[in-house]
Length: 365
Image (tube, rainbow, N blue to C red):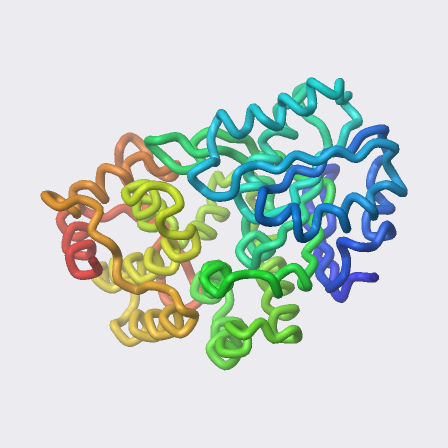
């Protein structure tokens, strides 16, 4: 099968294509342009591997004489050193060399860990993203962020390491639970307020089609999301400035994930709620009006996402949020820097006083 769309990430010698279409995993021609080698390792999890690993293995056998598979435990709670080491165990046990290519078959957790393993093994081997969740297709598989969680913070240990290609097979989305679909919609919604109000208008018109996984609507949403992310990453690969806008909703969201325990809320659920909190903070600072906050809140709710934050500490809920947010990667010298909305379609990195942030947390939780 040939892709419906191809979006290119332009990073000089690290440039690569994102192929978007249906039935792409099955086709050997999907992977024809990859560098050859003796060994390929498919890294998947216990949920996804039974569905798609055989299809991917069959497609790769045309190019690699040996195709290995490892099934990791499923879920954010397993995104740590011990699970990462399982990948290295397979590579070393089978004497995988520098031309070995890793294939990340799964959602964001699998993609982040496979990329980090590829960046680290023999100081760098090629890898390919084959994302099977909506969230990973529109966000985590694109842009080369890889890593694992630490008990004190999400994605705090990792590397920037670009894949050889990203293969977004839309047909894999049909097996997603509704909760995972909603989680992916959070990352699609985020692109509108930070970069493209026309896209936000389009999402509002088509949100019910997206919830139902309408093929044409999905293809457009994935393509436009990847285009916006490609544009941002092409200008700021290592998040020294502009790329930070892609973290709209994530500072609050990561605090929710860490505070509840990884895996209790899905990443997209935490980001959806985090966007409401970040928009509310933007309003408190006079950057946007209440009507815009309400508009976003209604869209996030229509996607099936929570708009009220959880209590993560019975005694001092806001204090616990603040403590966790100080461990965010965007923090500098203990000061939390938030991605806020500076009017329609524009985002800005700003600090805010603890007092105002406390007010927002109390209002939103």
